[in-house]
Image 1: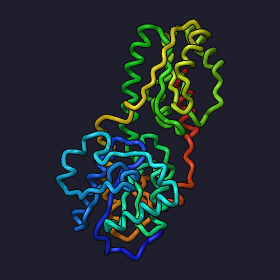
Image 2: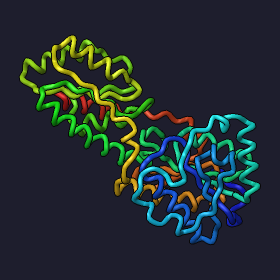
Image 3: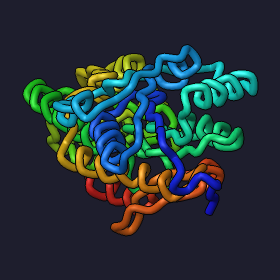
Image 4: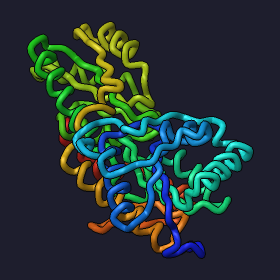
Length: 329
């Protein structure tokens, strides 16, 4: 485990949110700020992620600044993508700005791309701790990422509503959920919503003709609707719906849920997990640790080396996928 020589000497920490926003990020920010203040540290909030860091959008944060935010979706610090942070020049500039403001430790809330930036800053002498904040649940070192629970419940409730009207009109519905490279939202919604078909980015070789044949067979058996959950990484939902309708004669509609899945008040689970992860990140910094990611595994909050975490690849559990198929008959 990497440790710096700054244990017990950190006086000022920074916190930023980076990449796509996720419900529960505000709970993590609140926990970071209040835990650090309780330990006598100064806290600097960095607006708009690494982009804001490079533009010195840095504000002092007090306990009052994080009052009344735990129930709010999004991130009060805002977030942005930042191509410049992928360059050596950008990384050196970011480290220099942090040192200029006396920020000795940095908490980064985001996904893999955000952790890659934290890794580079750690190599440049800034103590960094990552907190997994992504609705995709695609970080292998942890069983939980901030925002997934809210996002999957938002999607589930929306799909329930589409299913109601789909059944009334005896339609096939192709419903696209987020997940460009990871199919966890699609898999969980497929099971929770009782979908007949789940299309995952991890399973690109799906056979559309088999889906069409299955729809025809289900109609013969008297089934009044057909739900296909399609991950964003597969895409083409609108054209897929047209092809299915032409081939089966069954009215077919595409619904793309889009960014509504990112928003909304976070669930209890997201608020609690984010709060504990935020507090643990500060504890790790105060112990002098750096280049670590907070995670949750086997019922415990733990931390991993960022290098190790970035080299892991998360796969869809075969057993869960099999169950989804078995229950769709």
